[in-house]
Image (cartoon, rainbow, N blue to C red; front, side):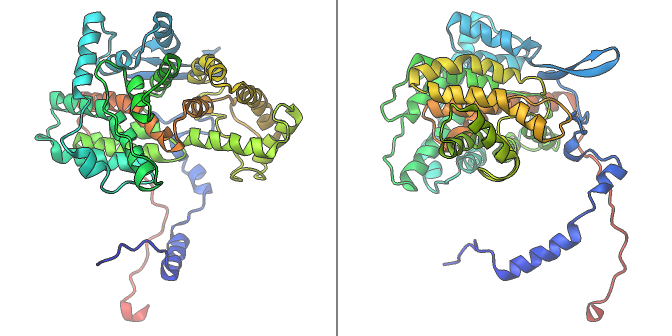
Length: 453
C-alpha cells in the first residue's frame, strides 16, 4: 500500500531554508515602487480593481474636499442594511431568502415573487442519491470547510452540464449551491462528529416549509428543536454575512477565477479556500477563543482594571496566542463603526437573556468599549478602531450552541449568495481575464553548467 507522505523531514526543512533565503525581499522596496501591500494603502483604502452594483461599503465622507472617517454603512443593491433588516424584524419574519433574491436580481420581490422563489430554493434543497453516504461520509474531515470544498467539487461530476457558463446555466448552478450549502455544512460536521469524535450520528432531512435558518438548527440538533428567537437571530447573522462588496478576499477570488472562464464549482471552491483562511472567515473563532482565555486569566471579569490589563497583555504578546491582537476589533475598511456589528448587537442582549449569559454579555460590552482606548494608548493607529461583525457573531453562535467547527461554514452558507451575485456580474459585464502586474526586483543571473556549480 502506497503511503501519502505527511511528515516534514530534515531534508524538507533544509530545502525550505534555501527557498526562504532566495525568496525573502527587502520590504522597503514596496515603498520604493509604491506597491500597496494587501492592495490597500496605509489608511486601509483598497486599490480600485473593478466596478460593482451588488453592494456598497462606506466608512468615510468628504468634508471640505477631504475624506474623513464616518460611521460605517453597508448597502445591498442600494438598500441600507439597517433599513433592510429592520423591515424583517418589524414584520417578525425571516429575511435570508428575500435578501438572496435582492442580491441576485437587483430588486426586492413582491409577495408572489418571494413565495415562488422560496419554493424554488426549497425544491433545490436536496442532494444526489447516496451523495451523503458516498461523498460526505467516505472521508470525513476535521475541517468542515475542506469537506465543503470537496463536496462542491464532487457535485461537478453529478451535473450533466457543468462547464456551460451561459447565464441561465450559471444561475441554475448558483441556486443549487445556495440551497444545498446548509446541508453540506451540517452533514459534514455530523460525519466528523461521528467518525472522528465518536459521537452519535444524526442526519435529519430539511423541511420544505422552513426557512434556511430554521433548517440549519433543525438538522444540527439531535432533538431538532429550537426557539423562534434562536432562528431569527441566526437568520439575521446570515444576512449580515451575505455580502460585503467586491473587494473582500473571497469575493475578489470569485471575480478573478470567474474571469478565466472556468466552471461554477471551481470558482466557488476557490472562494471557499479563501474564506477558510483565519484572516478572513475564521476571525469569529478567534474572538470566542480569546474570551474563553480571558475568563480563565482574569479573576473578576466584571473588574474593569483587570480586563484592561488583560487587553494590554494581548497587545504586548503576553496573553492568548501571543499575536499581539485583540480579535474582533478593527476592520480593513470601517473605523468609526461596523454597521453589521451594530445591527447584531441589538439582538445579542435578548439572546443572552434567554440563554442565561448576561454575565458574558456584560464582558463583551466592556471589551467593546475599552479596547479602542487601550489600542490608542499602546499603538500608533492610522484610522479609528471599533468592534467588527466577528466580535458579536462568534458570541451569537456560541449561544446557539453551534460547534466551533461550523463557524466558518456558516459564513460560507451566507456568503455563497454574494459570490453568486458577483460571479453573474463578472460574466455579464466583463470578458477580460484579470491579470494584474508584479514587478520583478531580482537582477539577472548568469547560467553556470552543472559540473561547475
